[in-house]
Image (cartoon, rainbow, N blue to C red; front, side):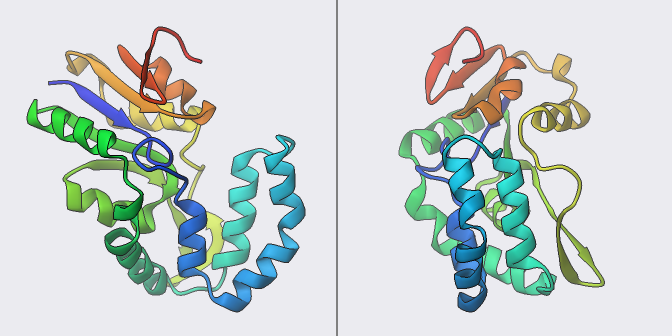
Length: 200
């Protein structure tokens, strides 16, 4: 049996789904205010001056603080069933099915949110390691539960969950430098769907 590790945003999908989910799940008034207040931070990210994890943390804090967990769970399930299907890469889904047919263990490893990744992965019979939102008494507090599942944290969680020596080979698929550490773990790494011999 092999272990196949897939990034989600931009690898399985044609674009990042986090912004789409925020537009889907956050109230229009809060969304409008957030666009204005967080615009400098987003601009800094686009210029390469602000790391992605800092931007996501700020967006989550503004968008979800004080929102009932149940509301986000329902939004995540609807997003998974109604929106994600329109953004899937055909070649990615074919590769996932190829691994499943071979009897491989297939895992989505993503910085995206459990709210929509968990129901989507359940639909497709996939295991999941991802970012989660923290809550107090059933209400989101605007923070992540632990670290975001990107970069070194991806590799740490993979090693924590799986003994790589148990698998005949490890495959990894990614599309950004937030996947570098995961790709470096693999016997067969694919960066933007091209086979690689070293971390890009």
